[in-house]
Length: 508
Image: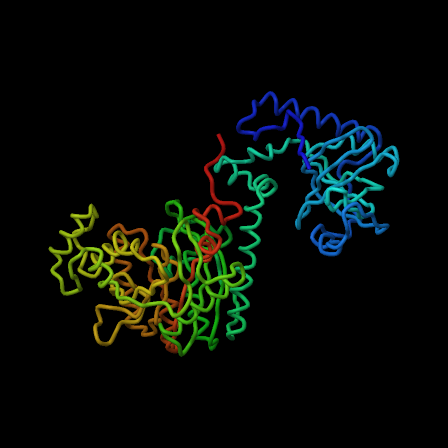
């Protein structure tokens, strides 16, 4: 079916002169006013829609070309296209499940319904009732006997073929983006299925979903710069949480064996393709488990999410083939750095040599940094980007792992991994530190770093130390970046493509 659109709504707002938009809005607002003056209601309270397009397509899949039925159905949706031929009008209506054609004939309708059909604008939301037919050209349609306006659209939609193409406008006006771009709606439908798959997998594995405070009075659980707010009733400074870790581990002390939380995290940091100041994580903790248990959890939940939206464990991400099948490999951080440098390095490598490697790659370092911190920085800058298929990067230096248990064979290293896919981190996991004396000492070092100017360092959480002193069982813990998993499994280039309402600068 051809698609005719009013000339005044032929381009997106960003490309259309303001005067033209205002003329079209004025025209539509006049229609609204006229309808009200005639005793009509352009925004009625409810409708009698009983069917969705997808169920009609399924139910009438065998209806032959040119065949009609006497079955009366009713649907509600937005007018996406309209053309008229004298006493016949063709309208395309979209509901959340698909689009269907309205085959409107003057003899089938009351005069007032036909007048409404002729006066509809693109973007109007309507309810229609009528018989199901299939046109001679094979188009499943509804032949309306009644039409009701549910919401008058007074702003023109972007033109279908040019669409809402400007990224900034799409993110800012996500409501229009969802109307005009099928693939955008598909991405967010997949996001919902991915989150459901996360929960089903965790629940089936015996984990309890819990909720912990978003407003916190101590900055902890991660090294990050927080958002700061003020609690008027208590007259105290609070932070929006940068992690859920310390509260979840308190629950292990309290006797829960397996807990998880899917929730928003807030970090007052930069924005780029993979970072947004407000994002979603799943953190999970399992008593009597360890790093190997967290590897199994990461593989299980991400594979379950992939199965919910993709038909294969071999997927494409931004032109790269990613293999999610099998057991994912584990590699030490120093090994990856050595491979990237083309020269072997380890914690025993002289600090001067590591500084030279950093300088050769244009990496700025601080004078007080130790070998462990330098290797971690080299890994972040030149090692991580080389990893394509899922890899558990292990053996993190203790300097960058204040909450992870030390390795007995080398206390300079910790039982920690980050899961890296396509050059980006997707999960961070520890064999959790449960020694209150060791944890208190690491908190003290974090406090010293904060006093030296590191505003991402953690604060001393005396209550958490008190909880550990009661005894926390050995445990494995993991945090998974949900937004990044959605990016991976929907082949989305930017985190803003998988956030319904990403943070934007104010409009000029």
